[in-house]
Length: 387
Image (cartoon, rainbow, N blue to C red; front, side, top):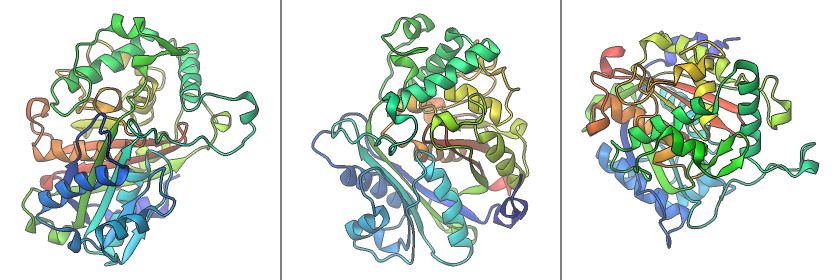
């Protein structure tokens, strides 16, 4: 069902991204999560030609600070007029795109900061396990067992193969090899993925995302102001959020995520279809994610995702560029990955991606994932000519 918000297209193009920033990635020993976040925020503000004193809207969450927006406001010495710290897992920052766009449209803030930092690798700040549930008695190894369960079901139901899962990892690595900032840039073959240390059947270690230190930040303003900044603005055209469950045993269908609902709603707001999209950024915590999300968003039919990702179709030179920074599998994954989807989309639409740049990219789609395939948030970004 498409809600009233998605039916009302007045939010389309009402806000724009005018600055993005990244920290370094990898093992940043000796730095806490706030310091890593601050590096990314500094670069985003510099990109927009602003300082922290210009920020009056904070949109952030993490797994360390219970009152994240308050901690960030105090850290930067600002008193924002609008704050949102909603945490729905790794998709939270794509969800912040909706909150920030609404706040900007209605004048609740003028400069919105979406930001995240984590030292999950050097500091061991990994996402906490869910509170006690009916699954707890089985002592599951979360999150990997939840995703492995979905992968096993997809393989059983549709004949998806381990080789097809490996295609996702190999494609991500090929993109990472074009990205100087990516953590893992060594060559990777299908045989390497299949021969890697097994973790939870059907996954080996190369089917699983990295554990990284890293941060990202994004600056947004109302569309009317967007052309007043140094870099070409990238506009929010559509965004929608959905969920079908919290714990994995309550997922209605292990082969269908809530992106099957959020995707059509976001595309409807944007006034585009999957066929119009030039570049796609998907939350690839595990190789099965990319297959599930391509199906649910409408880039291929349900059950055909394995075949769709094969033969280099989503790799450099393929039909559909997917996860052009290298994704969570090869670029960076500091516990919550959603903000990096949007930053890569913005950089692609601005033409800032160097060797991995998609020529004449005008429309980008992102899909954030949170929990155990639990929350899905889809966003569509466009260059100025798409308004």
